[in-house]
Image (cartoon, rainbow, N blue to C red):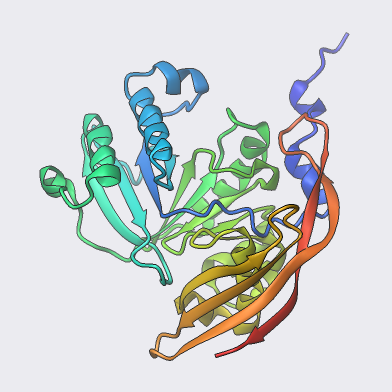
Length: 324
């Protein structure tokens, strides 16, 4: 008798989501910053509750969220090319101002026992980093792509994230682009999913044939429409509007500083929202768009692998006008 294979029998949440046509836009976690820390695997729940290194990290970010600090933590796996023995990288990507094009990066390389004290300082005392200045690295323009392969949270991330990570690492990594395996950052139903830094753009349902567009930022930007989860510098409805503008503007839109606000919305059912997005172009010229995002139907999705699918709303931009 052949024993059942639980992985083969599992209904991967990302396959359910993708086969039913769930649009990933608006699913990026809006954040004031990302704190990526080089931490040893495995990243199991048991270790985050009991390991002497991982538990303080876990507790620190719970304290931060309780204080209303929306800085999202990422564990990144040590890499034989990028890592330094007995030391760990910490990358802090923070929102530099209300209107911005990409997150501002600070890089530290320090002993692992200093990760938590540094993280605490970055979160709660960002103007008093004097004890850690000796670990801070010179500013650089290195791009970092972090791919979720965190199978301990959901098997879909390991099953689909690992091949995309391997392809990116093998075919695209360079002196100017590092590719890391990272921990869960939400939305495993969109696996394979990644965050591109320093822009802070989040991607999902990725296929090998679109990686050239994503990495090289050449060709038609519309090829990436269905894979874009959104820009983490904006909230849900703002992300949906921003995608439509980006599709019109093309790649240069990534160099525009942007901010947005919800002018009005359906607070009961979240069926619609009126959004204003303001921008500053690289040449200093300023402008604004206003638009309406509204429900256009629903699809069934599984938010966790093996779970029963549930209905989720889908949205579209029904009106978009440049007003300034």
